[in-house]
Length: 580
Ligand code: GLC
Ligand code: CA
Image (cartoon, rainbow, N blue to C red; front, side):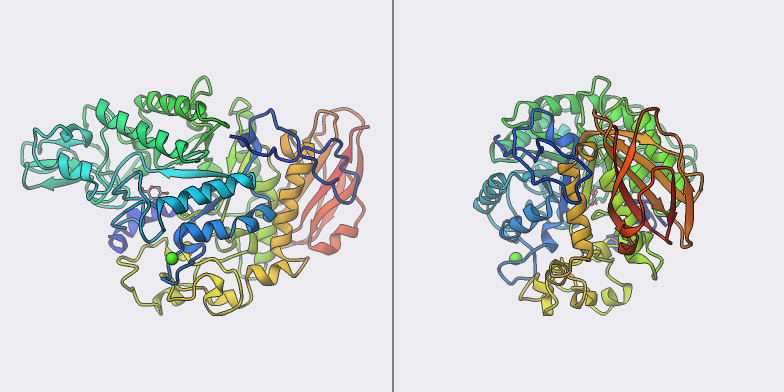
């Protein structure tokens, strides 16, 4: 399959129950050189986020420092040098707040606290400080649509109909027959309504019953959440990854769905998502982050049905979410050059020049090694998907372990690992959440204790230590892509030029800087050798200079041409050129 596993959850509901050192801007970056000139630091006047690489960390699985088998904030701090060396601009941490873990942290019981299993507020402060020192920004996950049912706000809200926080959540009288007010379905399965026996009303939850929706019509709630944002900004966050942004408001007429099972998927129904009132909230939030010293941003989990809807999420005047994740790209799992071309051309042509946000892997998505891999050519295929995401104009997200070609945890390995006290409920997203593979030792360098999810057996060979030592490894492929993104102006902020390959299996495009210098990208998305005849270049002089990067590596020796290419099965090739 391949929509995010959130979609899959519907089917499998039973299972779940300031002052940064500037990025490198070389004085002269001639793509002709075999290796780009060393980065010369300079203050970037432009918005750093428009072409950043943001690395998503699931802290629970990244690095454990106290042997309890659960990754922690200190662990993230310990690995900042690694991240710096890899070349990421920012990290996004999924929730580390106190939570009963009905949805592993996405059910927040205290928005301004650190769960003891992840550490302390002092650990957070240290992480923010150490990251800042290294020029790495940290984004906090803001779960703004719902809290945990164990949040004190909800406990108050449900205590009586007259409690001052009653309207902080979405309460509704039963339908005339005593049943739920509407027939709407939750994204995680079952009705969106849960009955409260004490106050004899239903509350609304688009996700789990343990995740009651917050009511953004309530001025008190709104103020409290804006204060949460100010709290983290004050504590050194560079912004937020906004969880589940489409769901802040529901259709106030509460219409019944005439076709619950049909029409749009349950997470994109017209009555439960994308209501225009949400835009005003996002504008407020943008104004809050804009005021943060050093410039903070909003990265949005903004699932949309169309590119036109995605454009709206930036705000009519580009004053809402800076970076809405492009799920139209991120949900693709079939390597099909034509489909990608369409999606990528749209993202560049239909978003009014705003930065697209490309990604494939996440804590909700199958890892791209697994989702695109055919079991035989996974290494080559992973080089294609990464080369594409990281050479497109805009911002790219990476998911921890992606850079070493981590796979989803095999079903059998999960099965062999009994649910322990640290994993109260199995989740169908467990496969992509297994511990980071740092070394080939037992525990993979993740933990000295019993890890909360099993470490993949593959860690004995697929791990950071081994790949650092091997210049041909996936790690070095990624590190080189990230380096080129920073040091080659065309790849950093150059225009996207769609090209025609004359071959449906080959995706071709170029990035071109203001001088006309640039990089052509050729990706053979098939298991057979292919030839390409490239056209679609804008007029002007242009000479191929060198093959920058190639997979398989042998093709690096092939001559560089801007008009024709022979490509091995699943080949990826970056050819640099000069515009004079
Ligand atoms: C988002 C998160 C997902 C979570 C859901 C409910 O989709 O990415 O992990 O389960 O929101 O908070
Ligand atoms: Ca720990």
